Amino acid sequence: MKKDEQVFGIRAVRQVFENDITRIMEVWVQDDTKVTELIKQAAQHDIVIHTVAKKTLDKLTNNGRHQNIVIRCKPLPVKNKATLAEILARLTVPPFLIVLDEIQDPHNLGACLRTAEASGVHAVIVPENRACKLTSIVRMVSTGAAENVPLIQVTNLVRTMNWLKEEGIWLVGADENGQASIFETRLTGPLALVLGSEGNGMRHLTKKTCDMTASIPMFGKVKSLNISVATGIFLYEAVRQRIAS
Image (cartoon, rainbow, N blue to C red; front, side, top):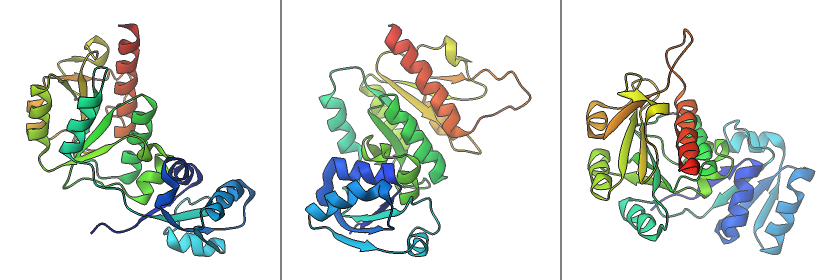
């Protein structure tokens, strides 16, 4: 059975309140006017509220950036390939997806989710193993986006990518030695952008499964970008093209 979830940080917590306040079981809070409205809502729903010192919140979050509020929630069901199939079936516009191959750092995953949600991505796909899960750090860094953009965990990433291709979705992989510049690559229509891990990029078979690869032009001495930055560049070039088409 999945454990209860802990969420902290004002924006992440507020998103849980807005999406489904019935999930919230307990609130730990330090006296702070910024969270007054949230506490009023919690009290109205008979949620247990603990008023504590900052050091207690620091301990609960392992010195995370809690912004004086922490909540314990009932867990959401893990989203899998079946969930993804349901999402695709409901769409009335071309699918816009991200595939993240073995992202390990929760701060990077949280940042990717934040940009994905802002740019209108329908789902983010990650492997079930050897990849960061939806932790409290991920939720905090995503500033609530993790509550809105589905994070799909699949047992076999390459098999899922091949299934997406069968569904008519074009797979473009981010690679420093890509076949073309991202700015010369078609990113309209049914699309999944594929990005690799922080240090090694896409695994060989993941790259091989893409329909094509594209690179971000680099004009300075630095030869690579942080994965969350690269994701943002790819996403918003796709958004630009999709708006213009």
